[in-house]
Length: 87
Image 1 (tube, one colour):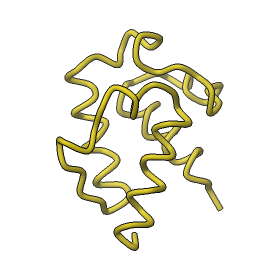
Image 2 (cartoon, rainbow, N blue to C red):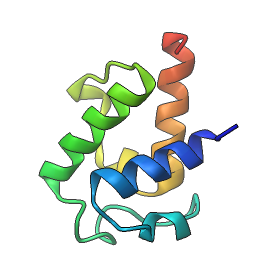
Image 3 (cartoon, one colour):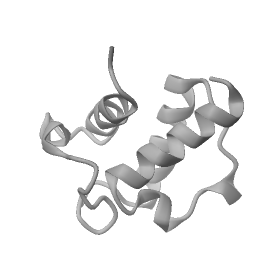
Image 4 (cartoon, rainbow, N blue to C red):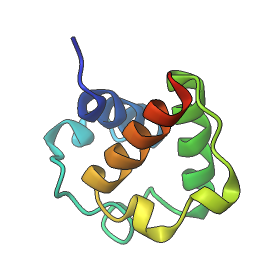
């Protein structure tokens, strides 16, 4: 069974068209400022992809730069949202 880390890594890879690069990312991998493809418009697309994949609803005020600081911080955010929504 895929972990949240695996699932978010796959979403990053497909949403940002990283052609497999995300498969080398671990929880400490920096996202914002490290991945040129991850600009402000890509963040919106990534949030939408996460919402659709996990069946979540993410409000704008829940998202901050810290959420996208590392792959681990993004996974922690997704896990927290899944836990609070029962998804």
